[in-house]
Image (cartoon, helix red, strand yellow):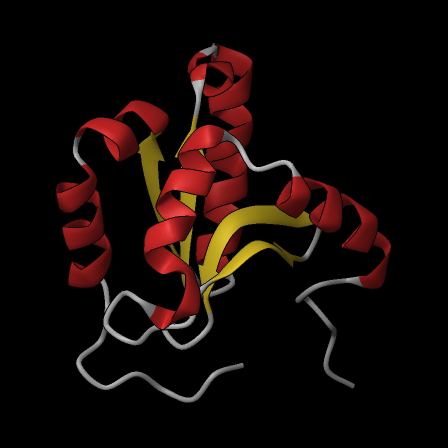
Length: 126
């Protein structure tokens, strides 16, 4: 039997809470990702993979986008982020990280980098 790694039921209340309380950077970027606005790719916000809840996930690209605020700048958080990213990459996902400031100050560059990680012909959604 295949193990379920996406949107485990016990994480649903946490995902819902995070979706209803996006950071300002998440809300700003979401306006450019929602409704398949970026090259027709569907993104989900606050999607869980195993026990991790990622900021944004594009199923057709197996692409994760994480936004990092000041809380991620200390050593302990950075170490946890690294472990988390390595696990997600081991599962076959590509992880892009952006500092919140980048989203506000350099949005076109952020969107361009996301697009550069798209495959030419997306596979079907998971």
